[in-house]
Image (cartoon, rainbow, N blue to C red):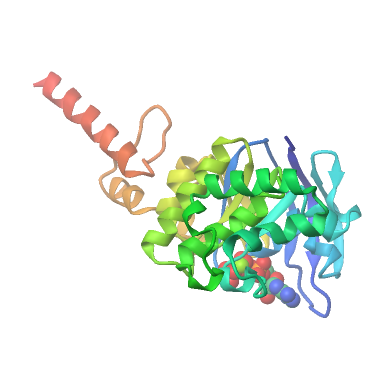
Length: 287
Ligand SMILES: Nc1ncnc2c1ncn2[C@@H]1O[C@H](COP(=O)(O)OP(=O)(O)OP(=O)(O)O)[C@@H](O)[C@H]1O
Ligand SMILES: [Mg+2]
């Protein structure tokens, strides 16, 4: 599985006067679940496109530095070749549907047909992808008759069937209701457990805190930090980047309840309640 290495990445879209990414460097280990956060226009989507190779090969513009996915230097590979290694899922599931296929099954087979995958292998991959995303029951349904969450899972299945090593999801749940959002997060976590590297932009900080191994914090096209959710959300300067901590972190901060081992505030309900139980136990011992 591929390690992602980004070194001094700088990028400016054509016909603009300002950098969209300014000297970004970090690396991601194979199988990590990375959340990307930052306020509007901080560069989250552009960073995603740069890992997928759409920046610079589709968007053009001026580019400096290096993005490696495993042994591949992303900018040297054509977009339709790169998508075999790095799959990208966008915000709106509607925009990702071909519109020409009558069933979910045909929709998922579309990318594989284009890749010239032999029939037997294709059937195996489609079945596996549908199983993983829990959409086998919709296989004969028209893609446009699915709910938002189901449609987004179909879009992810189409990508999974191509067996990429990295999947990038740019706000994949922002158009979904809470149930659809939960379905997508559960599905993505399953992919992560199978060893696929996940890069996900998401505005819901509770979800980012719950699912990410590490979080990339961007501000105004620059990298502020890449660290555990606990470290990122315990930063005293978080407000200045236009980012709110998860509600559990805010409550614990208000109560000055830090985890002494890590020096950080809890970021999930489970973590907060574990800390609380420990404090109650210690308190009752002291009495
Ligand atoms: N296709 C484009 N052409 C020109 N400039 C662009 C394009 N897409 C983004 N930009 C610019 O690049 C910078 C980073 O934008 P980007 O869309 O990557 O931020 P973002 O963090 O994803 O924002 P949002 O939260 O609104 O999705 C911004 O200044 C933006 O205006
Ligand atoms: Mg964006």
